[in-house]
Image 1 (cartoon, rainbow, N blue to C red):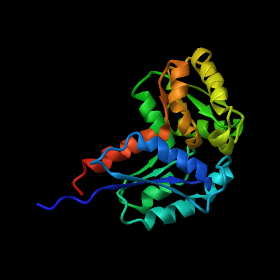
Image 2: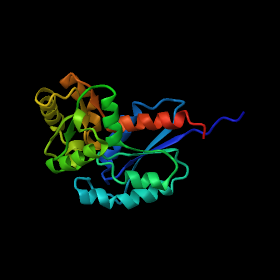
Image 3: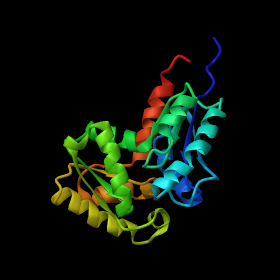
Image 4: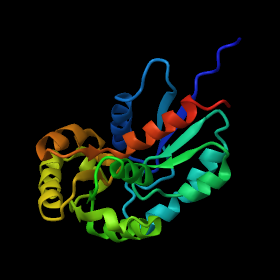
Length: 223
């Protein structure tokens, strides 16, 4: 019996910042394994340098849809932006599974703790994320969301990013009652382990969570 071709998962960074894409690749490398799916991280060239507004979210929907619809050699997709831009449009464009990191990160957090908190990059992203939590019906287990007051680029490069994440994480843990923290931006990926060590509670990198779900979806499928 012929061996099944190796499965492929495509992780798409919808912003055009290659540093963020490199951070994603480093983060998902930790959960890859020799006989598992091939995991590729790519940058959406048409995207803004950082997705920080609703306009940015809307602007990448069609480019993402075209990428997904035209990638017939891919077995699963991960949209690596915490706003889950174009998620439902992309799901309509393919029969392959498409995962958004916000949805995957929050569902993973709910499987491990009672109340989750989110570290956002900026204040104006919180309203967008709150709307999403309402749509998913999760406000009863949502401890709160607090901003770093930084840009996507700053979270990926800034030398003081981790210090600020620890400050905000402590507020979510001690003041808001979060049992687990979700990092609310793909650009935070490289800070997960030191943040978890500093806070003493689990910290979810939503891109790792989404890729883990994608691995489960394709590794054990018959197709």
